[in-house]
Image 1 (cartoon, rainbow, N blue to C red):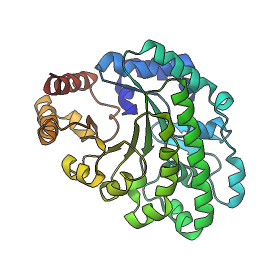
Image 2: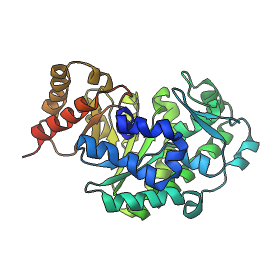
Image 3: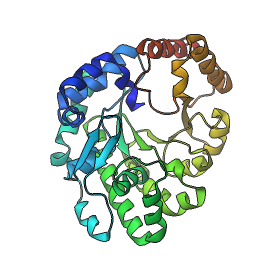
Image 4: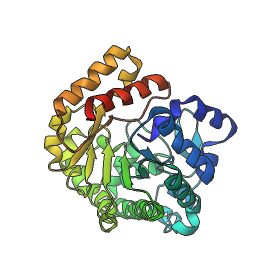
Length: 318
């Protein structure tokens, strides 16, 4: 997961000297942060250091990354007039720093680089709420109360994510991951009607590039079947759904998951036991990416993470 580096002391040292967006806007620093978990943990791929709001900031949306809170928007999305603020993304100029970071990483990495973007619903939820939310009340009110405006908003956000991911692949990313962190707040009916088409626009808009497409969400057990039909090659399954049950819902695709990140704070014997429980369930079936069900906690012990990577490698490599 993209948060793998945030528990590392070398990342914290950088954050003491640089703001979050300073790291994102500097190709060299982005590359350094992306490399840190690969070098420390020995994982099988790198994922670009970024945030779902990066394209929004790139087109001039005023957003602040507050420590311990997340992205906060000075002017939340409220009316149709706000659509005018969401101009089309011009990757060669707006995301020149991201493209350069990808190029640097492709030269330095000996593992694949995964590109990263936020899915339309989660981007919209931050924009509409003005920041993180526990109930997404304003978001759902807009979605149900003004469906025409909602569709227009998600369509523009889908275009931003699609342009960003295509640019990352063009610069050398070997796969892409679309994060829909908060889509599990929806029931299946509203997901199918109001969200899935926008996610499908992003995922299917990448089909001609020939790279694997990973679609990830949290608390999405009841949505997995539809997520499997939205155009991805891999669907994330979080820890709330048993991995094989989730795979059955996803259908004939690959799956990613699904160790509960909280388990990383338990004694090593518990971490190993829970990892083995997932691997035993998979039993060597091809198409499984072992991963956490969500991001690495900020207080996770890097030595435990490295030990987990080594444990999974020893269990699965012949």
